[in-house]
Image 1 (cartoon, one colour):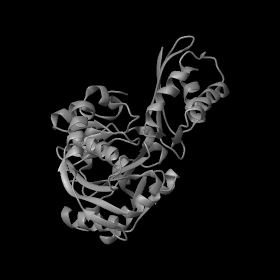
Image 2 (image 1 turned 90 degrees about the horizontal axis):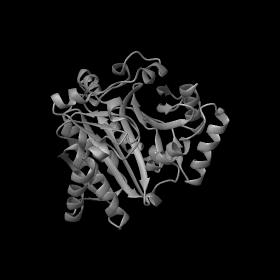
Image 3 (image 1 turned 90 degrees about the vertical axis):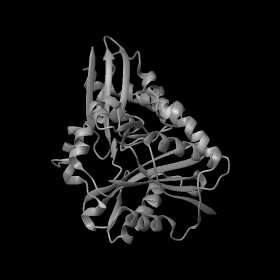
Image 4 (image 1 turned 135 degrees about the horizontal axis):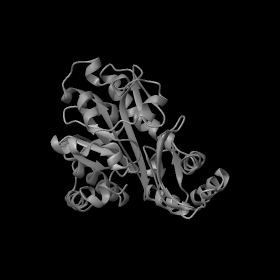
Length: 93
Length: 247
């Protein structure tokens, strides 16, 4: 199943999640007009989410993103781990 | 330190993005920090690094109007850069000459734009994350990246704008507009010409002075190495499908 969810983050930027999933997340793209440094590490965040059970809690997904962000010294501007996670939950539930 | 100023010139969008990267590389190797001004010919739509090209741009309409489309290496939103509609700048310098905080460094560089606008008699202010507004409307959008110890910030200063043309080329997201509770993009964008009827050269001179005041600088040009590297990046990266359709 493919879903696309778009949201303007309060006080932040526009984020669009394009997600393919059945029982697990099979593919995900996070697009929008936010800033993230270093830019190419967006793929590390996306790749870390592939395989996640679609019934996972928001907390599990947030923590997964936070771990990658910390490990790779990623800086997010106009977007945060919680809002990505919320959008993912919204798209797969 | 002395800044190299590269005065207003005209370039296509692929080359413009390639020059920013080529100069970033040469600044990393020790070249002088650089401020560059340019206009886009042909007019071009640029999209932010993280945006989906097909989500943001009416590609058929661009093709019909001979408008190029290029992905930037900076984040932020899609912008229609009209040849007659804007003055664009890049600031490229070693990260160490700017505050570590992204917000503060935006504030400093946007301050140069604000100073330039004040030279025209336009009162404007920086609104985080990356906008400058005048009379409550956006007049300048800016985007920054940092890589290999070099900061690049480029931004646009709206001189004139054909809103209908912009609407026809960009897919404006209704989520973005509804959040600001404003009916249309036209209501939230302004331009130098709304404040003063001056020609673009005159506007550029005022803006340039805003960037150079209180700085040691010289008027320079790109080196042959930078030009050659930019040609390479324009053809291999910025005009490639692989880069522009990456997301």
